[in-house]
Image 1: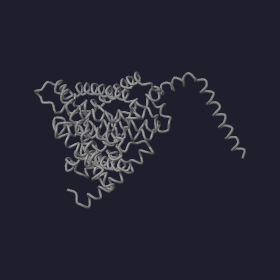
Image 2: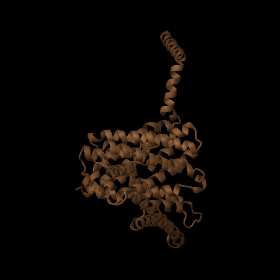
Image 3: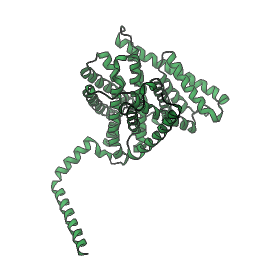
Image 4: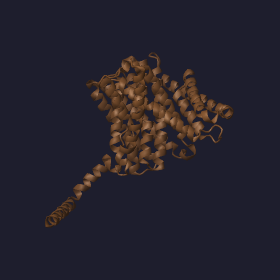
Length: 428
């Protein structure tokens, strides 16, 4: 058991580590998630400096709290007045991308892990969505066209919620119930309950807020409302996370100042989200074990499924929204896994112990997809990344072979200039 001094020292180190990792991401393009996870792995499974079993309950609570904050923040950032035109395109990308990824990953789990189809669907659901936290952070650095940014923000926010609903419905299905009817019925009921609770809470807040919320502590009051919506939605059988997202949409887009979320309140929730997220990924790295060699082939099959399904999803988006080839390639590379995947993997293990390997499997996919994002992020941020994609790289290689004689002439001129420079140095 850690002493009080050691706990405060660990907290101080994690705070400074989260801040430093975030700065590294802004300058180098390496996601802070990778740094936090690697530090956790060093402290836990690799060096055995910290026992991860004593943090299991706290890690689950922290992950859920981080999800609540991130989805609420995502909801407040969506502006329907500006994004209504692009909303249908984002819906196409969200549902096409998730359904294709869900199917591809489920097939990979069914064939390589030899799971029953129902359990393979759970693996597909957990790994089905991209990370809104990583995508939003990357878009802030890349600064893409407004059309691409709006589509990606809506897609990532809805994808997180869709994943939570799907996995929750799959896990809650009783063994004797018909699979399709239980899934569809549970999904619709969860949505309706969450929608009703969130809208009622937004209305009540609009009536009560001007009377009880002192300006200094309004952010704390809003956080209390957010947690109340989550708890009540879960208690009544809905999706707490969907209720939080809808509440954020209502409070972020309402026209009445009394219930509108002010910029300083958004800063508070953003900083709190950053703090909780930093702690969560370090503790996750401490707690989980590394994936075994027996799961290397399933991991590779899952990654292949992610790539193939992403290609088809982006092609589907191109059918309904006119975008340049550069914009489509940018959207294609934005599929990192993150917080939602990690939290859902832990929740699945709690209810289904036979998935004891799922957190390690999810962690491996998270790290690999974020490393892949970091490799292409630097070029995108410098506005030269479009040459990093397979399509543009193939064109460059093809053009290089076509201009073979031109390349030889360029090399000859370069050698001549070097010889002239050497001659001038020798004459001196």
